[in-house]
Amino acid sequence: MSAHIVSGFDQDLESLRSTIAEMGGICEKMLADAVTALVRRDEALAQRVIHADARLDTLQREIEEKAITTIARRQPLAIDLRDVVAAIRISADLERIGDLAKNCAKRTLAIAGGFQPPRVVTGVQSMADLVLEQLKDVLDAYAQRDLPKAMDVWRRDGQIDALYTSLFRELLTYMMEDPRNISFCAHLLFYGKNVERIGDHTTNIAETVHYLVTGETLAAERPKDDGASQARIDLDATTGG
Image (cartoon, rainbow, N blue to C red; front, side, top):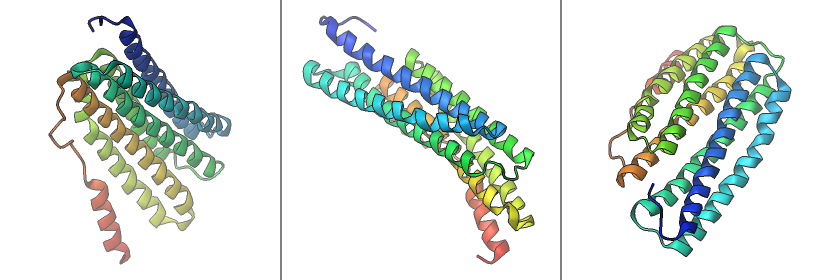
């Protein structure tokens, strides 16, 4: 990035990028801790994830205020304006990722002490690990203005959908085999859906990086897997729903 005539402008932009980096680090830790809390049945860790979300909310508000002030004072154009707009967009996605990680932690508390089929929990963990990798990669892509890396994250979204479909089918099987599993499996379904939605927000960030670097909105449709929808149709046919 070239220096601006007004050094304060560079400081404004750097402040926005630095706050995004802080938000990204918090999101990564929240997601990683939420999964660890589930696997280890660690209620104290789940509570820490829930409490961490307040800091994200504060940082998002700071970014919005900084961005508005920067636009008003500097009247940026072209890449500079895109930089400010990108910060606003990405902070919104990161704030939502924090909300979803918090929801995962709440599900962990709801099922604490209950029956947990090891293979299903491992499936959730695998999906979350993949989403966490995407989150780290897209944040790196933003920091480095690395368009190919951002687009790689964007193209990997279908893998998350496929894993969620597999998890969905397996949990339905557990519920149909034994009604006593319904409560636990329902919570885990919501847990998995939250993780899948975090994956969607990483692709949103990838699209924002594309806009930041090129100045154009990504026109192509993101890759999707419709297996979960088909699984719901199959379930309805089986149960007469």
